[in-house]
Amino acid sequence: MLWVVIAASVAALGAVLFGVFRAKKAHDSLGLEQITKWRKDWVPITVLVDFDNFLPEEVAKLKDAVRAAAHFWNEQVGVKLFASSMEIGTGATVPVMRHDPHTMEERKEAAAYAALHLNKKGELVRATVYMADWENLPSLILARTMKHELGHCLGLAHDEAELSVMYGKTSDRIYCVSPLDKEFLREVYGAPQT
Image (cartoon, rainbow, N blue to C red):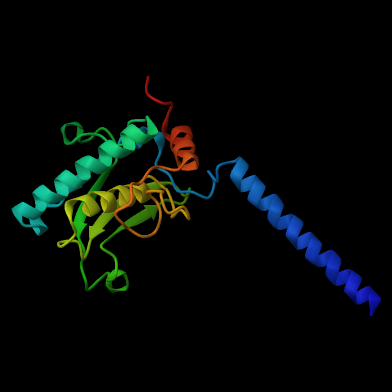
């Protein structure tokens, strides 16, 4: 009986140490292998609103939100991650589309979501932001929602910190980019601007 208790204790200790080692390794490497990213030469990314499926006043509201979100990421990280619409073609393009309830039924609770497509190397090759139940969102919340979705389009996952722009729920809090996310984006996409 004593041998069973000792064997179980050793196995439990081994599992704990293995978990700590894996967590430390992932933190030390910033998780670059686990987080999707564009090829560096595809950045800056141009974000375009799909004119055909929104009313003119909706396009204007979304374009303002996209502009604010792109400026936020460029300023917070200190790297030109998003280009202006004047620079179409210099990198990847992310369209902002109206959500199709027939093909995206599982996402019906979200105001917006990002669909990411990867190649066999695990690199991002296409990203689309879908706008679902967003029409009644105040402009400030719409801009924050767009910041969050553009964060996904950069390869970031949800964050546990409530003040992080990558936190999974929207609110009227002031959001920022977490230091770890900033470090990841700077390491992947380029040195800080001077």
